[in-house]
Amino acid sequence: MNKPSKKRALRGRAGRMRGGRGSGRASPGQVRLWGRHAVEAALKNPARQHRKLWATREGIASLDGDLPPDFPVEFADVADLGRLVARDAPHQGLVLDCFALEDIHLSDILAEEGKEGPIVVLDQVTDPHNLGAILRSSAAFDAAAIVTQDRHAPPESGVVAKSASGALETVPWVRVVNLARALEELAEAGYWRIGLTGHAEATLAEALPAGQVALVLGAEGEGMRQNIEAHCDALAKLPISAAMESLNVSNAAAVALYAIATRPSD
Image (cartoon, rainbow, N blue to C red; front, side, top):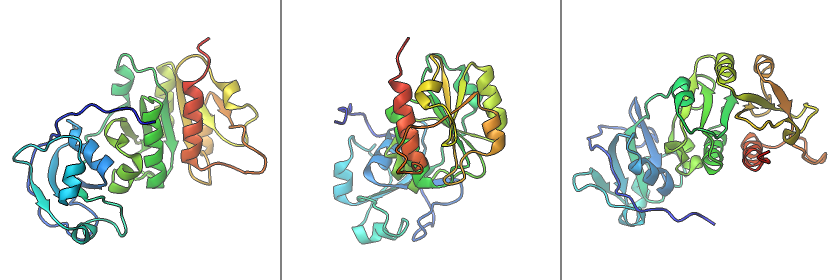
């Protein structure tokens, strides 16, 4: 059952966009989002600067909140909106051009008080659908942040946002140059680093400590790189059936985050 949401005014600084039609992409430095949950979350995010919204009247009516009177909206039909996004993208009558979110530093996340949720570290997870799904699970289980490399990871995009169903706007996403160094920084901050891999001996339940956890997951197919495994305090596996070799990385993340959220307090 979904939690009831409080109505808030939609926000954003208005601006004019030039070009970009028909490509499914925004101009450099901008992001094109589509779908009700992704667009609505972006409009409610005070950290997000917006440029222009294309919408059907039904799409506008579906939003939870009111747009500012001067917000730049261009009404269009479904077919026209389809030409603004990737082929067959489910835009639900809403397409938003906005600026990419500002970079977040890991040190800023670690300095925040009251951040008790796990931090999810992704080693070269390149599929934007998987990244978006992991963001969604991270929001559902109160993860403090996700950490990826600035290379070998998807950029912020409409596909990530749609798959994240609004979580792109609420879960801090830290991009780092060196993932091993980031894991060292997490250890110094008191996080127990658990790498999830099928060849581990211990199950995740056996490896979980009582304190703060950094959950490390590897790329689709290849898993974690050796150097990243070496920077983990423990390796663990999910106790899945022998009839199945492995889980998709986003499914594994969801199961692991649930296990962390429901571990015994003592």
